[in-house]
Amino acid sequence: MRRKLMLIGCVLLYATVPAFAVTDYLDLSLIKYDPYPVEPGKSFDVWVKVENLGDNDVNDASVEFIPRFPFSVQEGESSAKNPGTILKGKDIVYRFRLQTDVNAVRGSNRITFGYRLGDLLYTRDFDIDVGTDVVDSRGTVTLEKVGVEPAVLMPGDRGTVTVTVKNTASQYSITLDKVYSLNAIIQSATLSGGERIRVLSPPYSSVGVLGPGNSMDLVFSIEVDASAPEGTYLLDLETQGSARLFGVSWKIPVEVDNSSAEILLAEPPGNKDIVFNVVNPRHNSLSAVEVIPRSAGIRFSPETYFIGTMGADEMYTATFDIEGNPGDMAFSVRFKNGNNWHESPVKTVRLNSTEPVSTGGQVSIIPLLAIALLLAIVIVFFVYMRRKRRSEK
Image (cartoon, rainbow, N blue to C red; front, side, top):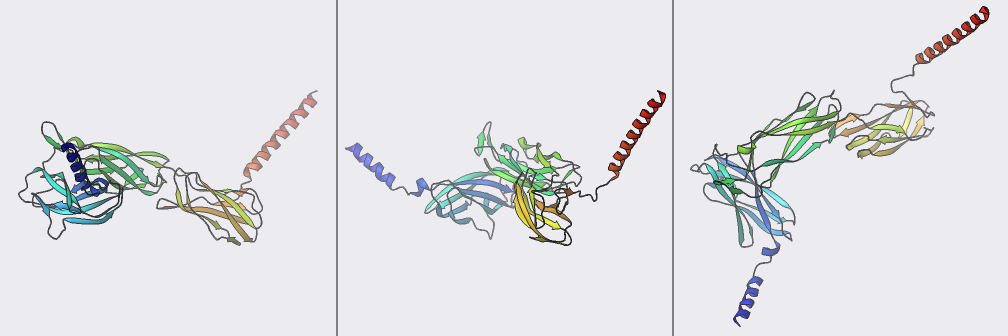
């Protein structure tokens, strides 16, 4: 009988647990703080991410900073953020403006954040380093991914390089001879180019601290020299930090290709229309692609043929209706590679001819005259030798 009563009591106790304790689950993580390290008596910024890992959308949640020595909310700032609804699988990042007490002890100090659901408050502690001599953080930064936009640049282009660095630690501290923080400290990040690719962005300074498992994007602007040959160029990314992060560097590849969009005749031009195949031979997409006709005395419909975005190795067919006097017609392709405008070499086509005219002007007859002269000399030589042999006989 006693066992039955205990079993019934356990069932009733479980039934009283709020539903969100099982189905609603938010996770808090400290993304970074700046400056690193924070100084006693000074203010600093903390970025905290709240992520919905539960089965449902979460409504009416609040993310809160819990004051405790040596950290407090800066005057005029709020200690709570109210995201409203956090959708399932989504996250939100909040910035808190905080103050360090003037009597803060130099070294690793605990800071507390929490989220509130209904009447329940869930808290989590993180480490904040105070002072200028803290070097005990042992988080490890790796290069998670690299993105170049546009993916393949052309000579003279400007673009961006985005590198994502990640702290691969899975917990906030580790105990060896003492307790070490596993935050990853990044004091600076520098991308260096060379003669052919110039880095326009200044180095990052006081990047901050990455919590375990968190990532950060570092974005740099670059410019390719107008005379740069095709090929893959390696830029140098260097990060400086404390302890194990000192002097970490990676090679960042950037590809340069001078291939342009091309125009090819799809069929012999007629008196009423002309049909082209427009080809993107590059390894990356082009945008705002349009075919532009340039010929006096001929009216084209449409005036320009807009294609839009062309993927790598894609081909589109463009048709122009033509009206006017026969003659040579010139066409080119205008397009954007990233945010850079380019135009293809002009393609000239003669009406009622299946062959395009050279874009360099009229065809020279000098090579033909030279061949004819050479043939004449050969013929005269053979005739002379034949007559000479007959006279000797």
